[in-house]
Length: 141
Image (tube, rainbow, N blue to C red; front, side):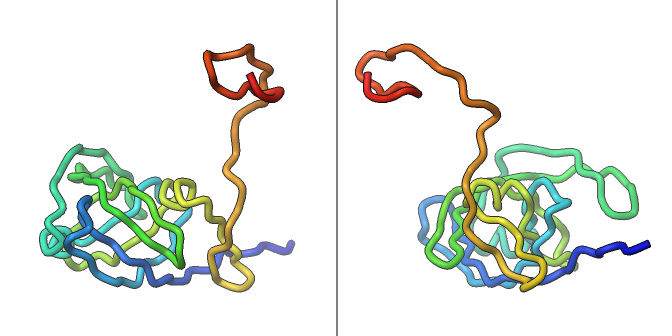
């Protein structure tokens, strides 16, 4: 039986606080099994990132942890956005999770261990009627 194993690789990203005044270039492990991206707490503190939510996360050894969460600016090869991250302990490596990849419109090319642009998916195409001054699914309003 042939079984393909997902590769693990890192990418260089720039993380910044929301106003962009503090930033750092970091190597983050691409982890499509992780919902949120993760930063070590000391890096988040250095960037001036403020805790804005809490999340229950299941980690690789099946424990459930309570983590603080925040929003950061991220940039990867000309693509940027604001993403949610959880704050890990300083011994944990930064992760780039599935939510960030979706927000940035990126997909994993595991053969070449890189991220590539992709289309953003919608659930379904449903015809809609005119919405005051906005384009409809079938053309201009």
